[in-house]
Image (cartoon, rainbow, N blue to C red; front, side, top):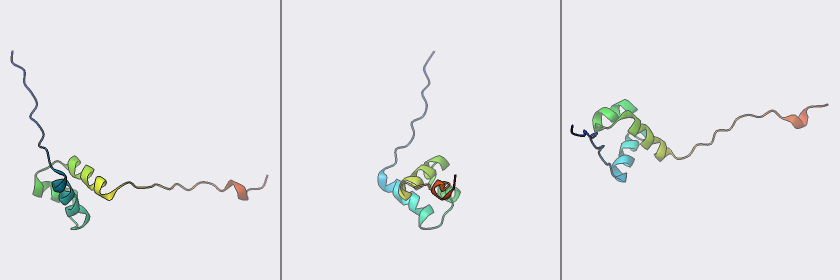
Length: 70
């Protein structure tokens, strides 16, 4: 029996990833349009867009306990 290996994923350089993300962020492409034009996976585009946008801070409202009377 011969071992079958998975096909290797293509390696994209940083410039390609940034340019791909900018299609969505700056040019208004949908993720699917970018995927169709570039031939990459939907999850890759999503990762690259999130990486370009940077960290987000989620602020949840908290009850204000100091204004409550006992």
